[in-house]
Length: 141
Length: 141
Image 1 (spheres, each protein chain N blue to C red):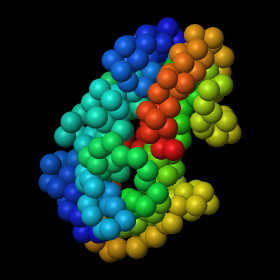
Image 2 (image 1 turned 90 degrees about the vertical axis):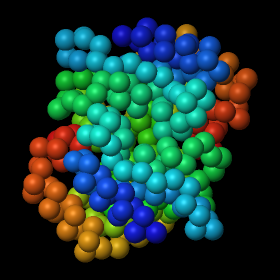
Image 3 (image 1 turned 30 degrees about the vertical axis):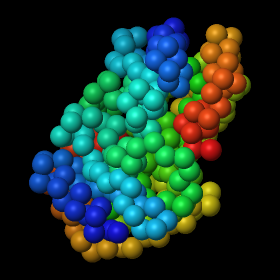
């Protein structure tokens, strides 16, 4: 599942964007939606990886059996999305280059897995080194 | 400032949507962006009032001197947005029909004002009574 999110992140990087990708999967492993950060591509600061994947999945009733897969620990905005909609599980590529709200999600009953995936770490580490301006804009710092 | 958010909420109701509206203002009282919940109108579950107003304001550097005005206490998703981007203040029409994360925001340094506005209360109370299915879908319950 992480490979779908990583493909999205890499596509975002190739477009000059923030390389965070995500995908929402159903209980049966079916892909419900996938997306990436589109701040640069669409001039849209509200389009984070997770929110894009959630949006792409369309209107659903009940997220308890879904899994949000993301290349990077979800920021507070995306963590809030996960908590509000009761997404049951979050699979995170890495939390080394940025730590968002995943511990808070775990405290509130979300099943959280951090993979510490080297490809995800390298992607973000290189991006933050190359474009700190864009990265800090994207997380409001 | 609340009247702008309330106009958005009422426009959403007239469109058959969830009547929550919001607006982002700068330090000088200038309107930066306004919007409303667009779940029904756009089939977009990621478009809450606050995220729509934030999106409409476009890419900005620094939100510390901005105020998010919303007709209803922000859900966890929208509270996460406010915290992540460091929006300095939140002005809330009412928190009587739904209580989101505004106390959490106050704990984390956001200046929170709840107006308990009768028009905002009536709008949501009538909507929840008329369309509980849509309302509970919108907050993931």
